[in-house]
Image (tube, rainbow, N blue to C red):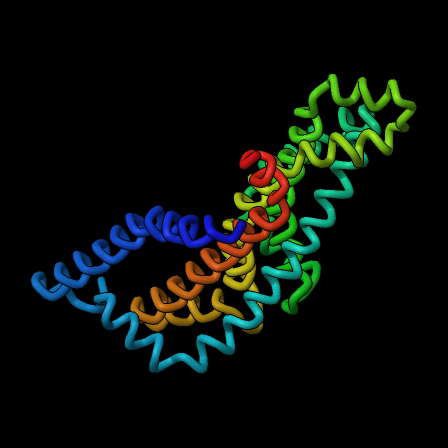
Length: 262
């Protein structure tokens, strides 16, 4: 039973190797271009300079990374809860779905650049507006994924459960919810890539601390190297959260892999 694990790990490393090589190549070409062209670091700093600024300003960057990560995790947790509760309500009440779904669609058409200052104005400069903006940006993909996942349930399975006397609640728990899980995790991966960006944008509009404040101050001080250092950290956070959701999906849907191996 444990023999395939090394093979799967090796396969995973092999699949990830092209991405690693492409990123390393891009940074190498960037470094070579800056060194050869002699372009001013005020216009385009080299990756080595960005890394140097990350090391020199590691305390400031870390101190401002913590509130950004807090806003991201709290906002995404709230978004996940809201999306799941709403999806269940919409699935059990089709009329409510027809009434509210257009409103949810409209909420995603509102420009963040216009909404963010109002949210900060209404709720202040603490963690609350950042959490709300992260929730607003990330809940819709998960909601749509869950609703579509419920609708993908095999009708024959539902008919079989109903014929055995199962209630709508039992059918939802035994058939519709498991069918929605692959869709849910697809929406989860999409949403998590927006979460950090939404938190940083909220800080950029108005906050006391965070990577958005670092980027704003560095931009105003004509420090593109420090701006890119904060951007690299935000990218690392996003990749780490994306990897965590992918790992969670593998653990939660292990039954599908086991079924496929039979």
